[in-house]
Image (tube, rainbow, N blue to C red; front, side):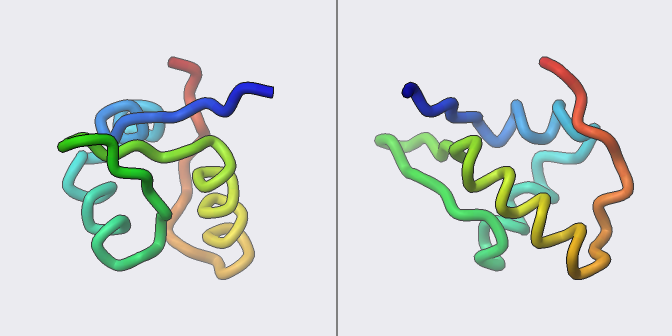
Length: 68
């Protein structure tokens, strides 16, 4: 099974967020990433884990995931 990876820009667009918000979550250790050269990628599994964690904790995710 092939794993889907997203860029920071894709995550920001998917959830109508600023890229700076996504980078802040990465810096704070809230989203796990994979660095490929100079690029940061986020796996579908890590994104799903983050969404589940934010929903359980009552975080600031009050938006719906959009299809790219």
